[in-house]
Structure formats: C-alpha cells, structure tokens
Length: 215
Image 1 (cartoon, rainbow, N blue to C red):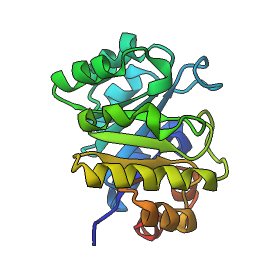
Image 2: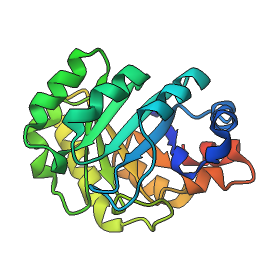
Image 3: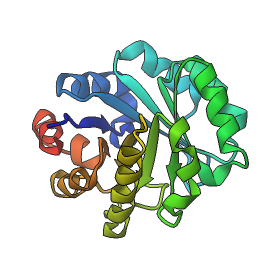
C-alpha cells in the first residue's frame, strides 16, 4: 500500500508565527509544506512572495511545494527557485508555452509541475505528463482556503491515474481543495498520491491525528 504524501497548506497557518507552525506540521509527520503564491490577478487574492519562501527555507527541512497562482510564472519562477523552493507548480492556463517553462524549471535542478483549474480538462495537459514531476488537480476554484470539495473533479484524478499508469510516467498526482478525512479517501481511491490540506489540519486540536487521518 502506497504511503500518501501530506502537504499542509500554510495559507491556513498563523502568519505571525510561521516558524512555529512549520515545526508543528513537521512534528505531526507532514511530508511537504504547500505554499500558495497568489498575485490578485490570476486569482482574486494576494498572499506571499519569494522573500517569505526564503524565510521558510531557513525554518524547515520540509519539502517546499510552491504553487504559483500567478499570471506570469515564467517571469517570477526563478525568484522562488533561488529562495529555496523544492517544487514549483504553475497553472497551465497562465502560460502559452508550458513545455518550455517546465524544461527551464527542471534544468535549474528542482522539480516542476502544472496545475489545472476545475474547468480545465485533462486533455489540456496530457501531452505534458511525460515531462512532469507532479500534476496538481484543483478541487476548488483557486484563490481562497476553506472552500467545499468539488466531487466533479474526482473523475479527473482517475483519468490522470490511468494515463500515468498505462504509459508508466513518473508523475505524482496531487489534489488541493476541501481536503479532509472524508474527501481524502475519495481522492486516494481515485488515484491521488499527495494531498494538500489547510483548514482541516491547522484548525485541528490534534494536528498529528489530522495528518494521519489523511493517509
């Protein structure tokens, strides 16, 4: 049985004390820290930039999974790579040459992935899967934490799982949006390898128990 990667989203953490929050999820057994970068243009919210990622890098050994929800990822990704990101994920809807950007990111020595919004079909990224380290399926509209899980996206996870397995691609399927102990089971059953969860983990009385429940 595969061990599911749990990536708490720091979007739901206490921004006044991110170092302590990172230590909490690390002690709870999380694998990655998911960092949502929003520009107020590609999505209707503004969060953090590369300087914060640089500080996070100093504070934790956890894999920094940086999700760029921004209009010009090709312009800014290098800043995040230099700040210490281990994985950079950008939205396929935000670029014209996704293949080229993937090659650039991977050439820098870190992992690269693409994310798709709920309205974007798998067919939009099928030709990229052989180049990806990770594909991120959004099960909410990106922009804000605390939204409800969209059941309609489960078939997308299953479709990706079939393509990746049939073609033997080395690509992780990550899911983000409304993930809790119940929706996690649905996603894992459909083929997810990694789960991003914010409110469910950071609002839990027992974070370790919450992390384990997702597995």
